[in-house]
Length: 237
Image (tube, rainbow, N blue to C red; front, side):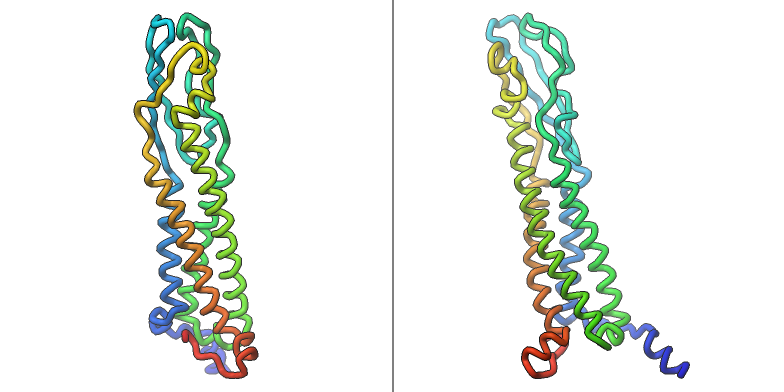
């Protein structure tokens, strides 16, 4: 009885599952999740705006820095004072885009953690995983949920990023700063680099493809696939 229990709960280290699609794709999901939340979280960008008064009274240079989680409505464009011979109140950028990027980063972190746990199970406890339909069934359902959440979070973050790009552009600054619409010409002369954030969106949709594809291999491990085909499913096939 003791030997039987030890065999059931003991670790059986085997790297073979990593050579099968189920395990290999999970490695890719683990790596791509790191790139997804790593390229969006911790971002900081700087921009410089040149302000030229219409009456040629003076010119000014405005600088602002924005960062993750992109609560731009808390970023001051101008702290207040005299510009173009007018008293100008403190002016902030427009929009709070924290919800979309924080959701995206959260899904990335959770996907990273789940992939790591799944890999440990595949490598060390595959005999328990395949003992009943409970493990493969839960794995399939969770994989489908992650595919759905990657779709939602990546789409939301892609839209949020487009809004951030607009708000920090010349057109967005002119909309935010009313002085630019009437008494001055404002031009963004140094744009914040958005390449890293664009890459994060790409990795988000790549994760969607990976998790959606992995759902099929997770499904083939379940008894649902076996009963639908009337044959015994071949693990990893």
